Amino acid sequence: MLYSIAQQSHQGGRDYNEDRTAIFEREGAVLLVVADGLGGHAGGDLASQAFVDAMGDSFTRATGRQLLDAANFLKLSINYAHHKIHRRAANHGYDPKTPKTTCVVCLICGDEATWAHSGDSRLYLINKRKIQAQTTDHVSIKHGTTGNHPINRCVGGAEPPMPEISEPFIMSDGDILILASDGAWQSFKPRDLEEYIDAEHPTLGLDNLLQTLENRNKAPSDNLSITMLYWGVSQLDNPSATAYEESDSIQLLSHEDYADPKSLDGKTPFDIEDLDNKINEIEEFILDIDKQI
Image (cartoon, rainbow, N blue to C red; front, side):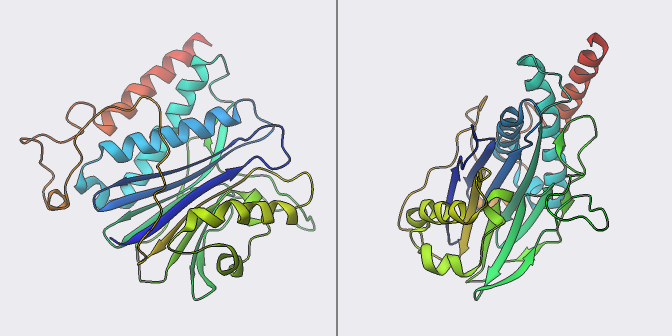
């Protein structure tokens, strides 16, 4: 796998930043994440941070075989993140069903990319200065209305998450993945990449790009966040992945392990705390909270 990556978030004209970004890497796979906590709902920043933490936790602990089944991995991981938002909200004194976040995530395993989103955070696939594919916002549009429309899907809240998951896409040299919160994509143009971003040093120009996008937005600008990946490019700077809370030290799988779900002397990283079991445990925890409320 040969790629370069970058991530950046700006507060914009808001009082605080409810966006979160993350890039998680292991041999043979990378996970890109953008979460945008819903404004107007208490704990939006808590929800977006919990989402990022949960996705990193799932990605780090997954076996190679689980990552190869990308659609199922994304579905389970987003469901886990939904419950983690509930749990963290309760621990911080919020109504567990109040904090919510939109999200867009992309898992690349080998040369195959699969993405999922919920809400109006977007993914763009760009090549040769043209948008080859993009996600469709989950919003409710009333006939004859313009401007902002209410989001009808998210992670967290009372309803179970319903992420939209893409078909697998085989990456080719020159492909660019852009994951963006609505504050960033509302004025983004593909040609901005050529003007501001060097594919081999993407972190160097991303701050200037976000500042330009903020200046284009109607003041006060919303939070702006982008995670990006250039495929087939060798990275010359060294970005660091976002750290997440409650992490455990485990061995990562090697590329050879992708063909065999067993590793670590016959054990998988999920032998101690399998994702499915974890979801069940959290569901029981939430049921207990509901009974107490």
